[in-house]
Length: 639
Image 1 (spheres, helix red, strand yellow):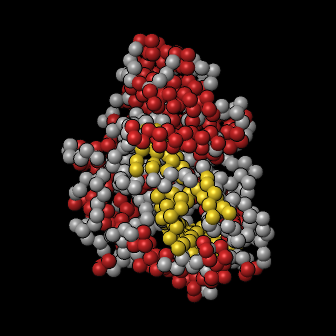
Image 2 (image 1 turned 135 degrees about the vertical axis):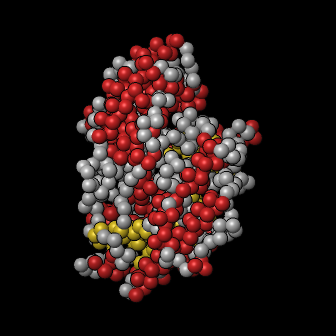
Image 3 (image 1 turned 30 degrees about the vertical axis):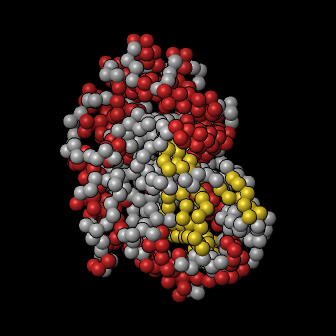
């Protein structure tokens, strides 16, 4: 997956020791929420980003930088650890997963090597952040709080561009008030992508998102000005980046280029120029970069050895000429909020290959988070769809997916034509499919255990998910992967597979049965048997399969019993399976309301739920079931 080149680019491990005091650079990560490379320096025709463009002119701009996930928490998990979230089991939004003591998060590595560490804004690492940072405040000049002259590592989130502001006028208003009127984008002249319906409302929101990026441009300059005023600019290496793509459908939560391609600009001051490519102060870099490389890069620049377990490689290295360049970048999509999914991607610099393991689930799944309630862009997408006004392209948002997608980004940068069935590209597809499969196996991808099953196995073994995933006896990945491939590609299942000794094998055979659409009596008999399965995840999936077949007489009693389960991971899975498989869950109203009540916070709390994690998402799934039944409306659950 790598190739040797003659260039000053990447180093996997450097054998140097930290040096003292001011000879060590400060490392500042300035991270936007939910934006694509919509800056002038990236060639975006609608961009108004003069400060970032000027910064890029004296820095290294990476044209092909990619997040490892198209949503915040798993992307930040990778940034915070140097490991793919799928290897840690931290790829689901939002969760809290134990990681072993043998894996030190990036902030702790900096701290252990004499750095003062600071965080501004959210963590969202999907693991416990307590104690990782010396300073955690809403501060855009955190270095002033240092008790001594230690160098600092700061992870600074600037959130004006989050999807909440991008999609909700009232949330955007305070930030937009900071933008002069002459800089407000004209909705009639912005260049709307062809995969969105071209309406006045979509243009208004698209223009507003560009306005928010202009606001972020000013916020970045405020931080850079503070560095300059405090005499820190020449001692600080600055990274400008975003956690993933734009906070709109087909960007955030999607494995397309639009969801994974991100801006990345790195400024290295004069005194550290030895780490710059060819010792230049600025450059435009075409090489592929994955976010899993950024922790290794930050440590290298600080003179700290890269842990052997890191999956990434440094982008810069001092006095290196024989180095390794990345051939591929990988992406992963799993549960987002209450909506389960499982897709993986690989990009080789031209061709993007995506593999869907639950292809029957459309991109716009039914449910609260993608409902036409608060987010204005979603309201408009639903309005257009309900009116039957979708274009052939925008209609795909609502349809089941092929199990494979392949796009030639050189000739089709908008990813409009799926070439997975092209005979001319058969060998290319096979090659990328093989590369992706090898990556899944090499990194011990946890996604082929549905989330509650991953936790069950780890808990029963008394280890963290990461440790469980490394143990072939606990996680026979290749065998499970074969079942997942057969299920997703052909809707394959066997009666023997439904009775396999491994619950994950039984689960994937059930998914194969769901995908197949088979309604045979023999399958129904096998599903009925699985309703008494000893594994509750398998039992739930069997109830979902029967619900999809219309056998509510069998599914409803099973769900009624399962709704009593209180383990958070399992309760969420039960709630979501129920919500998407029963056309009218009204028979379960009492059980649904009782289950929902368990996850609500006491009256007067800041949020309706006990936590903005499993409690919130379980409530959303249960609320969707009540809305489908006509027992409640969207407004009943507005918060």
